[in-house]
Length: 126
Image 1 (tube, rainbow, N blue to C red):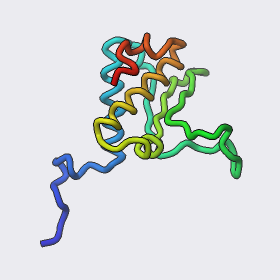
Image 2: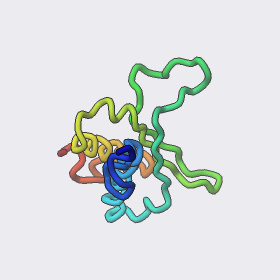
Image 3: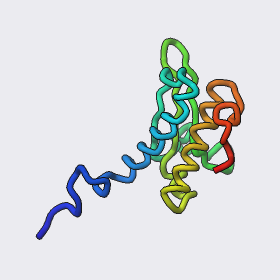
Image 4: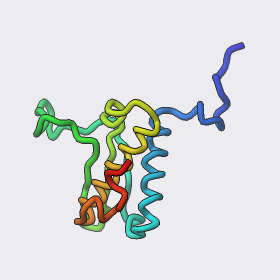
C-alpha cells in the first residue's frame, strides 16, 4: 500500500521547518507573558543567513544563529532565527528547543536594549 507514512494531522507529517517554527513560537509565547510589547515584534525563521552582497565572505568567522531588524519608518521590529545553523549545532529536540530559546532571548534583549538575563531570568540555565 502506498501513501503517506502518517496522516497530515499527526505530528510525524510536520516538516522540519514547521517543527522548528513551532519551537520559535513556543519560546516567544514564554517571553510574551513577561514582555507584552513583544506582540509588536515579528518573529521569522529563515533557513540560513544571507551574505551582505553577492560573492562577499562573512564579516566574521562564525555563522550567526539569529539577527534583529529594529523598527523604523512605521515598520515593526523583527527577530530572525536561522534554522540550519541551529539544527547543525544540536543533536535532539530538547537541545534544539533550548538553543532556539537562547537565541530568541538574546535577539529580544538586543532589540529592547536589555541583558538576556533581564529578558529571561533563567537564561543560561538550560
